[in-house]
Amino acid sequence: MNPLTEADKQTFLSGLHVCTLAVPQPGKGPLLAPIWYDYEPGNRVRFIMGPQSRKAQLLAQGTRVSLCVQDEAPPYAYVSVEGPVVTIEACTEQALKDMAVRYLGADDGEQYAKSMRGAEAALLVSVQPETWLAADFSRS
Image 1 (cartoon, rainbow, N blue to C red):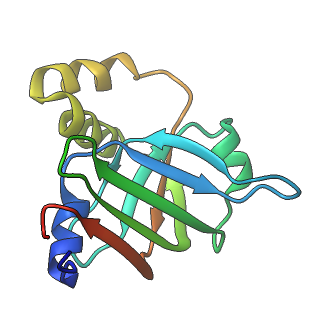
Image 2 (cartoon, helix red, strand yellow; image 1 turned 135 degrees about the horizontal axis):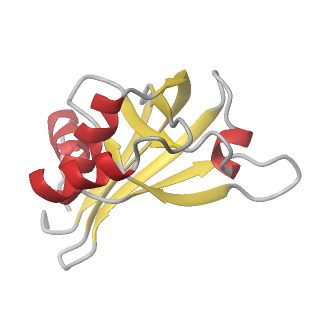
């Protein structure tokens, strides 16, 4: 298997995948949760969560988390990153709409974002990837 370059890893992570987030829990194994996320090569990974969620209760700036995305069809490929939570801030309507459109398409994403108006304010979290692991089994 040929290793992925740094650019390959970043390109893969910027693709449309459901991400698994791992957050440390004191005295237990990590909390694992599927999330929608956004990433542009060279930037931070961003995701949205409810402020009352278990994820939000465990996260604080500086908490180190791991994220993993994968292709579920052969030949399999994955990229995982680990790094600190850099910011946790109120999520804007635009950020929520952008994330929904990324995963659901323009019409359904817009409708989803509208349905969330008036709901509990969401949090926008950003993580700085520091450690990268990856494999692409099509590169044999």
